[in-house]
Amino acid sequence: MKYYSTNKQAPVASLEEAVVKGLAGDKGLYMPEYIDSLDEEVIANMKNQSFHEIACTVAQMFFGEDIEPEVLDGIVKDTLSFETPVVPVKDNIYSLELFHGPTLAFKDVGGRFMARLLGYFIKKEGLKQVNVLVATSGDTGSAVANGFLGVPGIHVYVLYPKGKVSPIQECQFTTLGQNITALEIDGTFDDCQALVKSAFMDEELNRHMKLTSANSINVARFLPQSFYYFNAYAQLDKLGKADELVVCVPSGNFGNITAGLFAYWMGLPIKRFVAANNRNDVFLEYLNTGTYTPRPSVATLANAMDVGDPSNFARIIDLFGAFNDPHKEICALISGHRYTDEEIASTMRAVYKETGYILDPHGACGYQGLLDSDLSETETGLFLETAHPAKFKGTVDKILEADIEIPAKLKAFMEGTKQSIELAKDFEGFKSFLMSR
Ligand SMILES: *Cc1c(COP(=O)(O)O)cnc(C)c1O
Image (cartoon, rainbow, N blue to C red):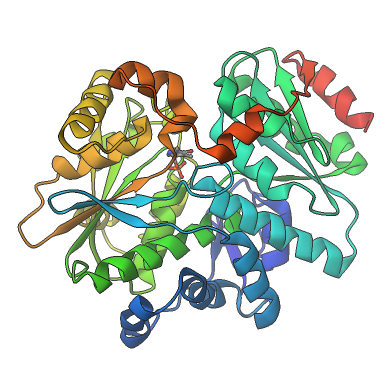
């Protein structure tokens, strides 16, 4: 399978090139040249299969041409050491719990898959060490660091804003050691991201070391997220609830919902999608007006969705690019909602009081997005619960006036010793640090 750039100004790439480079040379995002459909019977039969079997079928469609079946199955198996159960919350609304992995957020799926795939290419091609730079506002860093932990041939540098990630999040990437280095930047998340971008563009640095990105711009990170859409469908199908499925995705960089759209393109019978935003609502504005106007992000309770210029927007536009009126087609399939911090808190409280279910601030946007989508009697609503509420314990406890339990997995991170290197936010300092490695 070849991958083209959404900007169409760069040569097509092999899977390996797309994964190792991350972003295309023209700054576009890589897209698979075609998306094959799965037969209806194959999808209907998924209700009798395990998550691993379902994921192997889907992975085969994307990566089957480039990787031998046994290797691919092994990568899928290693990635999915946990389940993503569908749990009833209220009436016809279900939660797809994506937080049962090692760092308790959905990014574990893509992070682990990408780490294993990259590790495979490095070994097969005898590549020199690949260095992954990742800027994080909290969640991405932990999933990527834990996914890549101990993978030979890879070193990960996690850049995070000093004092601006929760203590629980911080310990998930600063206590690991081995091939993970945490860089505590005296600045904001935007400063961290700017440092990473400058590093990719610096010729001298790129001659010195091989650099790649593990954000959802990387095809190896976002495509595997389509696995759990199929798995969720299969679980609801088993309950007889999958005929008219409405899926709501709490969205920031839009990688997650794009993976859902890929599943839809492959024939997964989802009736419609809802994109839930916090106050960073450039996508909703696009749906409403047809114009896309990126702007700086604002801080909210659902901080993993604080994105003002979602990178995967380019992929969504590209998916619909063959239609006469892409905006009309996008609006026919995807609707949008946006929520303020007050609304997020009030949804969390209402659901907790009525059902006992604890939503995290991101999942709360997803749940409320379904409530506001006029579900008909025959439709089933599924929202993606993207992180375990205990990752945001301080916020959640305060809103619910509760003392929620911290899962053992998370506690284990908190017992480790923090190791990080403090750096200023100027590029020269960051560069000379990397040049010394
Ligand atoms: C990353 C993240 C999101 C947003 O996902 P995108 O793929 O960037 O749209 C939502 N919730 C949580 C908890 C996340 O970590």
